[in-house]
Image (tube, rainbow, N blue to C red; front, side):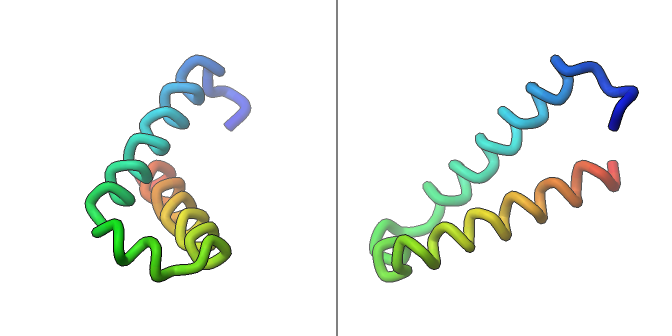
Length: 58
């Protein structure tokens, strides 16, 4: 992680955010509303960590 350029890390973060946002958008609004805001937060964290793991594998 230390040998990666910061601009590349920034790109990765933006890519991950897009991925999470797309996933949220894909879910029906009703479904996301059913989940409480707390649960939604944990869901986002889970998605984020999965995305991070996927990036590490690549």
